[in-house]
Length: 500
Image (cartoon, rainbow, N blue to C red; front, side):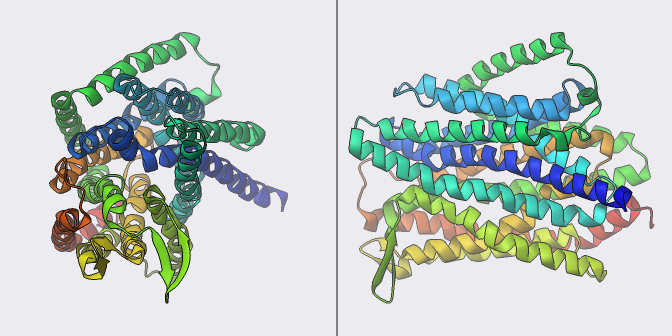
């Protein structure tokens, strides 16, 4: 009995340890994301177009960097050590953003530190979850869905809390100090995460990659640090110069495609089928993240200019949010929907009736389409150019369900279709593809850029609703394409599993 229960307890505690540090990392990241576009527009004086493109480029870098971090975790420092180093670097990045200045180069340098920290952290945290449940494919979808729910606790709390801190400090102390106080909260969250991991570290001693079980090679460690410093400078330059950002995204995307094609050509029949299936789903994920990027760009600015911030029900005032807090609807819906989906997955799997991941992706696009059509018809519920706050709630509800069906299973898809020896790198490649689409999402958001000098909500409302309706139509097209490749995906899956 001891032999049986021991591994089960270890798995549960190990999974909890990774979830908690990821929760605090997401607390920091989403607290910053809730404010960053507003900070650039309202505090630094950027126009909509520049703010959208800078944040799109930053999001691209943040998602691309795990490709390098995953390789460092697999081959150089170890998965556990690289994740912890990333958390420490992230806390330094948020600390840099607490400096009360409006110098754009300082902002870009701080964001560069966050890019590097995220690269070291993100792929390795996801890879640790995979290692915990290695050999237990039946639990992967459920585990990654619960993992996705757990980290959204941090996102929801921070997206509600950091805008409140910003507003409170700005009112009490003035001088724009509230922005920097809110970024300080993000830093403190990361420090809490590191302390919590230290207290629970025993549960992770048996989980990691090969370098984790060897003494640290300090020469390699300092080489990684030197490379990180260089990448901070490169990231700051990419954020400053638009042409460099575009070049970077093109090169990153083509590089991932080239590596995928090389591995597909090199693998045996089963590996080849799995990698092709993963590539198809990653391409679908690229389209999804174009929709996803609207949350922190066009939807954020829509909430600022064209949403009534008061929540009322049958004429009774319930509460009032600041525009940045509407982004918290996404993680709140994720927390509500994740246990339901995880239960459905587990029950369907036990009965042999689980939908394949490719079908869940198609359903996810259909649901996202509904969400954007809700936003697209927001003008029908508007008074003097301000639409009801309930439009945001229901739009985010469908949007978030789509996210769970697509992005929420992205890591599980990599774990299922990619050989274990490529785990860290391929999770990084997944994030690279997502990052490229984040930049594309910033470009798409600029179709709703409000020209300078226009502040009347009646003039800005049709600019946003036109974009959202077109995005709904685009999501319908993605749904049709995802359904069209389902038969091919079923065959690839059977070959990968050795059934054909």
